[in-house]
Image 1 (cartoon, chains in turn red, orange):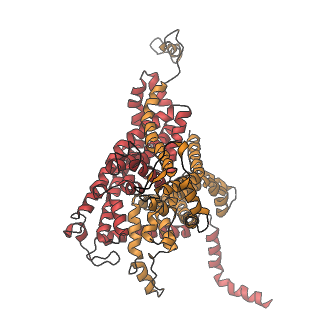
Image 2 (cartoon, rainbow over the protein chains, first blue to last red):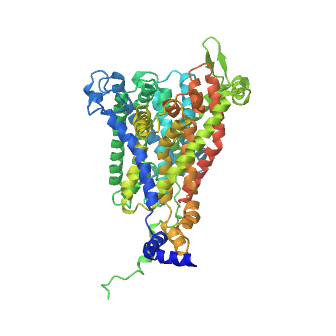
Image 3 (cartoon, chains in turn blue, cyan):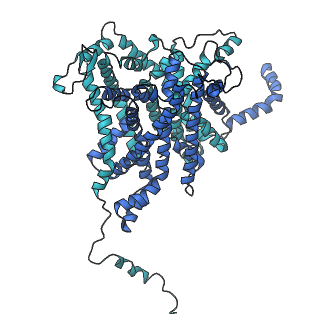
Length: 314
Length: 321
């Protein structure tokens, strides 16, 4: 008896705060602070290591683990080991750009034409090849790379090509052709058939309809897929690792891997990785701006443009 | 009166004569050949550089070994295939003293643990950004997507820098008197960390896109009908995010199973090696034929989830029409 009375009288002063806490917890629209904190922790965990890796590329000393002061030594200060003067690191940068450009130029037209044809041509053949195309999107890259390695080292006819630039581009195109094919098909579904029918009613031939109606409508999707292919090749590792043959056709990702794995890592590798990062971010930035420009006047906001150039939206 | 244009009535009869009399209005029927021509470069490309390579892989796996050059020889005629490589791989996987069997088990455990951890981290973050970020959604989205644009190798390099024995992680740990472990000395947890860190951007993107598409009015309806916040999540959001979760898991699990570089960079030890390391290690050796068979076995095992993915993608694109 007495204890309840005591507790009542004691709890009286703090009842207000308790009630407010309960009210706060019961508020159905309260801000999810826990989730927000979690998200920030995740973002720090995912981005801080990258920021530190960039910082180490400007390191004065030889360490990849301790920051010793700011310098551009590993970019061009060092006449032997910097990425500008070391012939292998230097050529790797241009090799990456070359592979990206060639792959994009070949994969995007093939993929777009494939998407248009497959999407409108009904039957068993197109649907099975569409199946094969999506399969090429999800097959583990190592398994595909091994198959490619075998045809360029063993198969009569293709063996003469051998490993190297041509093999790398052929492999990368096959690996990336599914981006434009999937994205353009997704866009075709949302566009529907009415524009095509209208232009046919107005007397356009099929070719004119493609050229004057469909291609302009598809431009943002084609552009987004080109951005994805280009940046995908910059970041690609497995295929180029398996299909490159010597220093002249080894791109940045493979150099970083093999040098670090071989125990010769150093801030120069961080500098190379930073250049790679910069390339990807420039491509992404241009992609974002270009996409916004192309979808001007349509109901596409910045967030949609962001996810589109990351391949998460048709 | 006469000046006024007659409304509507005279317009109606003027419309039909636009079509020529006597000819039926032809429905839009495009020429199929045009589509065939458009699709054919892609189809040819896929045949020559996707289907044939896998046949070549089979031919090498079922082929024989040239004793002189110590290199595998492909046999393209299925009637003269030899099963020597297959028998060898089978023994390595399931026989006594099977070293590859352990590697396969380890791969399954690593990938299962890494992908579940990824999901546990990625889902709340994607959920928050899709649903609660409000006006700051743009900036959250940029930060969330940024790792997607950073190359895998750079992300591994970043952790190699941090996890070195004199790296910043150990500096913090020894400051807290928690010792300084040799992270890169071949430990399973470092490999798991690498796998989670490496593949989470792809997962988070898929989850975000899926969660962002959920119509908020459905959630409001749930709340209006008296469900608590948690129950709305369990009864509405979670069922609606089943498809993105499945797609996202596939998109992380499939490449993880073919991963060899995370392991070599962050551990390099034999007792953490995965099936990818085994396949890659056999490539330029006399046992390349066994590597081919192993790749094909992995491919066969993964065919079910891959076909599921293809069907799910097709269904999703049909649902959008």
